[in-house]
Amino acid sequence: MVFDFVDNANMFNEALPMYKMFNASEYRPGAFVLASNAKKKLELDLWRKGEKPDLFLDIPIYETDYEEINVFNWRVEVKSMISQNEFVRMVTVQGETVSRYIVECKIIPDRVIETGYKNFNFFYEATVKKYADQFKMDLITPANMMKKFMEMVEKMDMSYSYKPVLLYAMFENADDKGKVLIGI
Image 1 (tube, rainbow, N blue to C red):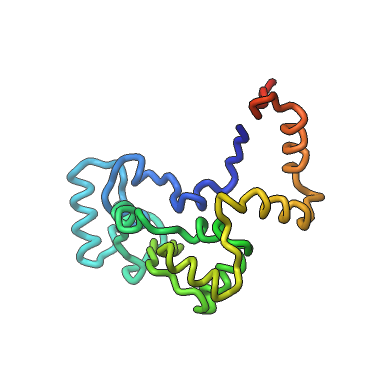
Image 2 (cartoon, rainbow, N blue to C red):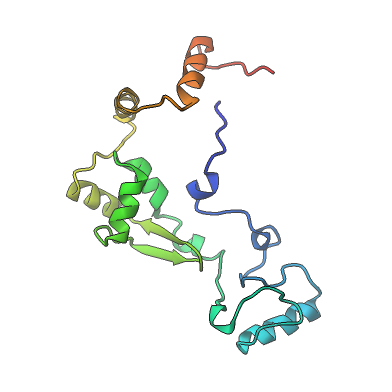
């Protein structure tokens, strides 16, 4: 097993905010997550009236910045869809290319989740296949994955990466079942 914790939040399109940890149903920038019910109600009443809860919120936010965002239910809506990061892993182009095509409106997501600071883009499988065909991107499938991986490794410059060293060490030390003992 290889443990690589880089960019897991992006990979799964979620971070671990306090709202999620405490199962809060709404997100409001700067709002209470843990407070007495009375303070939460007072604060919520102010937010809904479009007023800044000065008593509790000591950050420079103005009424025009208030936006209630549901950070939980959208996962149900996109459960069977493909995230932008998954899209990138399904085709033979870099993430920057897909992002640029989205910005240039060459690729249109089927569902966009706006979270106030970042949008998460989702696609149906047929949409991914359509754009792969349109832009001559090869689809990566279980049948061609090893071949595509080896083609990528042969072409890419990994002179500043630890990954070739790690892979080499794993191949050199793997047992007949492909397992590698990790020692300290």
